Amino acid sequence: MKTNNIEGLTMFEINVLIQQGGKFIIFPFILSKMVKRIKESNIYFIRPNESTFKYALKHFFINLSAGWRIFPYGPVYVAKSLFYLIKGGKDYTDTILKDLNTNKPVYNPQTRLSYK
Image (cartoon, rainbow, N blue to C red; front, side):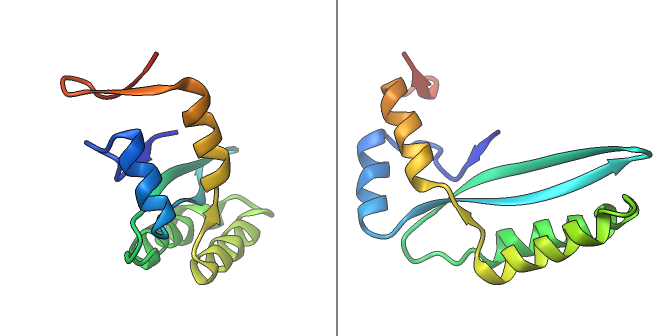
């Protein structure tokens, strides 16, 4: 999974933003290729005073346009997407912070965020 909105931030800056109210949010969506279904989600770092609506709406429209074709589960996934749109996404802040602290990330200006 790709983490969006953390470009150029150090681990210290991420921790400060989380203490101020930032969080890591996941919006699940599903795509269909004939009989194969692909469940995907991107991780978004939401800054303290930022709304999750623009990210949730994008994933809801992906589900609405492509997810319904998977019968019989397609409508269920679209309804689940609507639920997470209203709720504001799944909060995975604790899980991702634990993973980041375990891997001991080091800020390197050439590669942005790397793990040792």
